[in-house]
Image 1: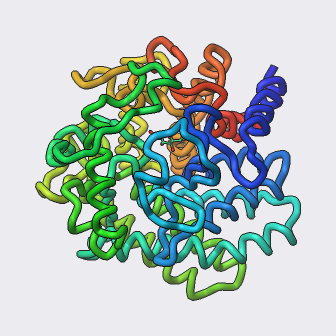
Image 2: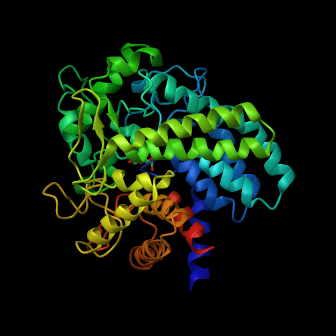
Length: 419
Ligand code: 9YW
């Protein structure tokens, strides 16, 4: 039974494989997405290590000169997605978007290296990627933490990969909708509009893109110029974990300078995470860098923080928090607390379960010794797949499959969990 699931998952990866990169799913997302690729490579690594390395290589071939790795790479022309390269206007040789996404590649590369059966290949690829991933991490702290707080801000909801999270609702009101050129959405022709962000949110997404484009995509200016600057605990945890993992990898590969710098970034980030803890919510919260306040929104971002090396008492508290969420839904871990007024079980990042998020939470809790909760989360992932297939996301109460089907990173996570 589980072997069948793994075989099916591999087929999803093969079907979405475009040779040197994979698409998240054909139709809805016809290009390469940043954190999708890093996590999908983990799935490929179980049956084709060379292909897994190529996935990450392709991503970093499109790294910007300043160190940023863009969130979408438009390898081919496809009118089926909005906003396409003409809207971004980044003028890259291979067109890309102008913002980034959760930097999970450092974690993925270390894991691929550690598990590699072809060590010469892994050593060569990891050695080449090491300075590139390090440059991306340094880019973050330089450009997205200009005050040196130890935590980076995102300047567009798309950067967190949690596009329409409740976390942004208040801060996003600061982003105007006036002056946005008329556009036609494409996502709602591929997926049920009830599972997607609203039109008004799309206008604000595009307003920000226009703003940054008018500033020539100059990252030394964008942070301070953006009316939307939010510190996300999940995003920061991913960056911290990737820095820490890159430090270990750099030690192994004999790169002491990268190791020391990576470790220093991770340590500073880890210490600063404490400022995002909420005793009242029993989890971490986002922080609005413009209003200077924590955002009172019980989303999964504050639980995903477990992916970094958080203190044992915080890992225990997050485990209790997940136990409490389990009382309000049938499948862990909902992207928003089902008891909150804003919860919507079908709408993207306002409630549904995402397997990639589950995977990272479980990975962090495993390191913290919370094996019972890890088993529970993994079992829920498998139950969801059995019931509803390889969907983009799932209703945490009914298990209804949402968004796109035949989804690459969902399949990759199944291979990871079951192998
Ligand atoms: C969009 C590809 C991407 C993910 C994001 C997810 C969604 C794209 O799909 O965003 O156009 O809204 O929110 O995390 O990387 O799977």
